[in-house]
Image (cartoon, rainbow, N blue to C red; front, top):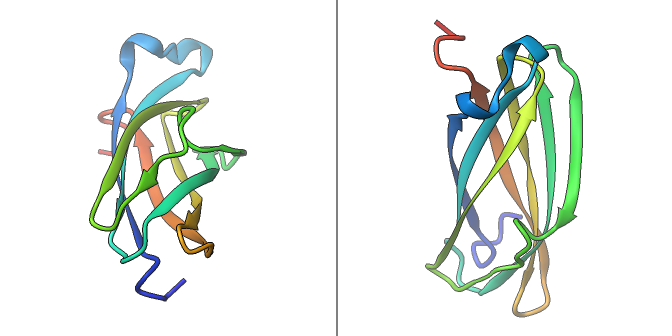
Length: 126
């Protein structure tokens, strides 16, 4: 949505979890910390999420669910919500992207895009 009243910015930091990974079993675990910032002028609640997780072989896992890590945070204009979660893929490199479905306090529903970000074992991408 291009209406400036309904603007959500999403930033992501990822980290490889070596201690939870098992390369011999094709298990690569990653943590990610996401900050969802309301840069619009209307408070909004994050009601659900939609993820596309793609491993290095091009296999896609689709995930949908209510809120994030068991919460449906309401974010005031200028405010933010930060949370951490994780994903396990079968390759050393992959990507995640998706969207949050938001409900503004004025009843407007809109989507906040989550740009693709990389999951990568250190050194896997020279």
